[in-house]
Length: 282
Image (tube, helix red, strand yellow):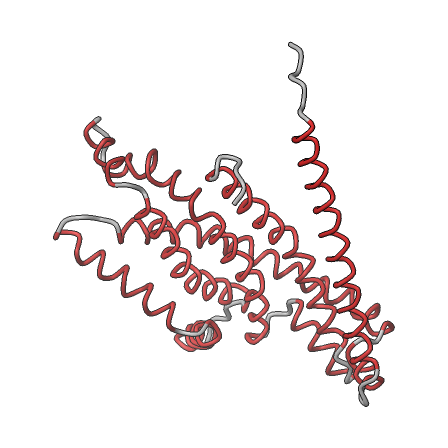
């Protein structure tokens, strides 16, 4: 099938849009370079820049600290893997509990709401101290690994956040779909599993990814319990050399670990927006 000829007016519009896009890219590059040069000039001409560079951005200490900090990061990754699975399971159950209808389920809804209110209100660092030092105090003769206690604290805290995100997704689904599913003979559990939850998860996936990225950062706080992770390894190196470059190493490694998921979150959010707009442009 032959393509229809394009009018001169349409060709002019396309050329104008290409010209406008090229101009926008050039202006963006130029403004970024100017901003970077200004920041570089201000920082490098500061009175204490030499000392700061030696203390925080020393290449020799960066290379020397990298193996041990990377080894500690492997512990962070393992804890994060286990915590994500635990949060996914318990948060889904908690969100489902808060959506139960009928007066008979009021105690379950109340306990679920109380849990989310309490653990969303308590700072994660406080939860770490309560779990990391309070639980072992119940039985001082038994040694519990700090990584295990840190994982529990991480799951307890982030379950409350993720549960609220999932609950918001569940409640965003129109009630007519629930009624239609029940009229077809599906039970409450089957309706949630086959009809409500799949749609809700798609709606709240960007928010869930943001929580996951936050969890990646907070997993580094388990170092306060004595677990030798990336942050603790950096602290040990700093204590022997009095140089803070290992903390920069840890920060860079955490950025490298988080970057793929940040880009994935942006890509998926753009995909959902494009899908909702049916390919249109606002």
